[in-house]
Amino acid sequence: MGFIGGKPVRGMMLVVFTVSAAVLSACAYTDDEAGTSAAPSASTSRPAPPRPPTADPALAREQAGNQAQLDRILGPRPSDLVLGGSGGLSGDGHRASLPGLSKGSYLVTSSCVGVTNAALLIAQPDRRGGTNYELELKCGRTGGMIVKLETGPVFAHLVPTTTEESRASVAGFWMVPAP
Image 1 (cartoon, rainbow, N blue to C red):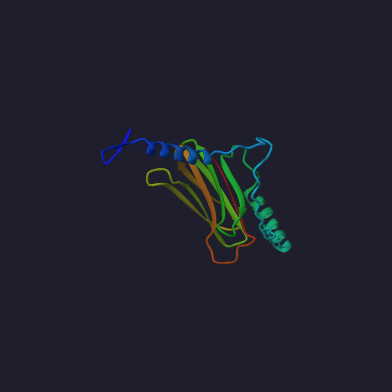
Image 2 (image 1 turned 90 degrees about the vertical axis):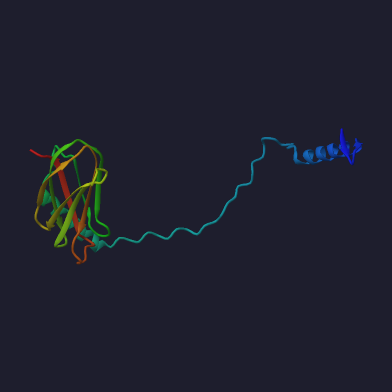
């Protein structure tokens, strides 16, 4: 029982209860076709994406020729290859990685074609202080180094180290266990 000014108020409680019930019942609804209708889909129309640029056939031929020359310089893929790859040097270069590598010494052989100089960077950045190796390359010849790596991921990045045009240039490398 409620009191206002010291007097019992029964009628007011009944009114509050009735109004509350009416408000709550207004929130409920029924669906005569339960399960047969789907919500309307919100479709938005977007313009079509731009067409990808068409390849320059002359550039593609030049890059294919450079890749064939690189393949001759590097020789056949080693049977004990741990990590390797080749690709274009335009933009930010060519990258390769391996999520898990066994601790040990590895022989790395690399080359490039299409520019005068490039570099191969080998890194294990998750090691305290990082493990980093850099092999400077005179393109058209092979370069090599032995790297000592710890267990864990390893990253390789081939980059041009010259300001000359490098749109059709390529580079590649092989990493095998050191003898």
